Length: 214
Image (cartoon, rainbow, N blue to C red):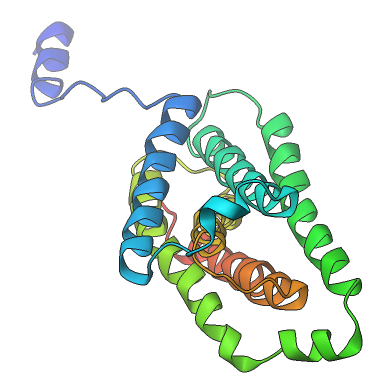
């Protein structure tokens, strides 16, 4: 058999490789999934009744901005790290880290300004409903982005898993900010941000270790 015939025979069943989404398009697509999850979650638990008044609050606006920034920047990082040849992700990874630390730092600062009774009140276990709501909202984008990432070529699965979880938790914290009317700084820091981020990072690391393989 001639070499050309052998090559033709071996390549007869090949199919064209589907081009991967660019990091920005990847981030846009799955950020949209995140927004859908937020809207679906709010349809089930309702939007906060004082939303119109809160739009003029700098604290509320900052919470929304930080949640959006975390979700969008982390989505771009996942898009870059999950496929070879997409360029470095250092700038976006740094942005993701800044948003994460800002959320944690701002939450702790707000809690630290409270008096003792307010701090204790913010620790009420009834606030766990907000934590569960935030995590619940993050599940839809988490499932979608996990499936999509596995179809790419994730070279750093553990890091991608953690950043992916942060992106989805960003959607969750955005949703709970638009839902919960409790203004206690300790409640917001603990149940809206700290616990969801901690659980998200641990879960993302586990997902990256076990599931993000190609």
